[in-house]
Length: 222
Image (cartoon, rainbow, N blue to C red; front, side, top):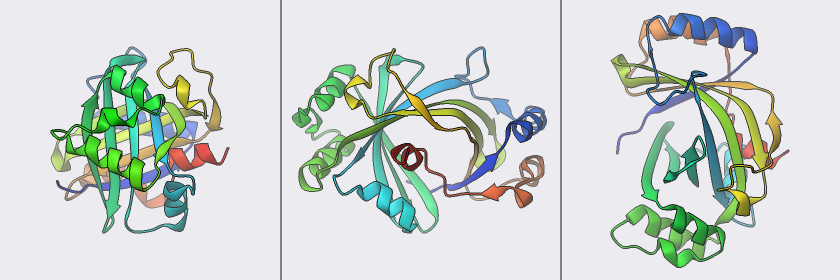
């Protein structure tokens, strides 16, 4: 599993409009984008009663991880469990499909649904639920607009309308009531070994405010 560089920047609505226009001239929109140019993501994050994931992020630990379940555009036929980790300033992500039935069992506290030997990531979460007391803690949803550039395997995303709910039992409900977590636009840049100059120039990264922004942490602090 290869690590990727990941940069995050606060931008405002004017920045977003200008960068988006320039980026669309050289990069391809994500193939899953809808008529509005993007899609909605809803994620359920796991943490323990000591808020391990929040504390590690706020402390800026160089090695940390978090588990989440997510799906897109209210489509519960495709749900992923993901483990996102950071080590040596690189980001790593592993994922595995789970069914809506498994997700419902998780929400009901029936964690044995994860104990499937042929799915190592599910077993890892099952073990950490048992021994680290990880539990579903918070829901975050937002609108994402994404672009790809082939050289450097670059992916640029704009996240907005970031909202949250602590009603974890309602994770699969389309009508879940959420509240605003932040009004910020977050631009994320992910790439492999290098960031092409053309993308760097378009994004004007040199004078942007780079941040360690975490949608999960912001949502927990609302």
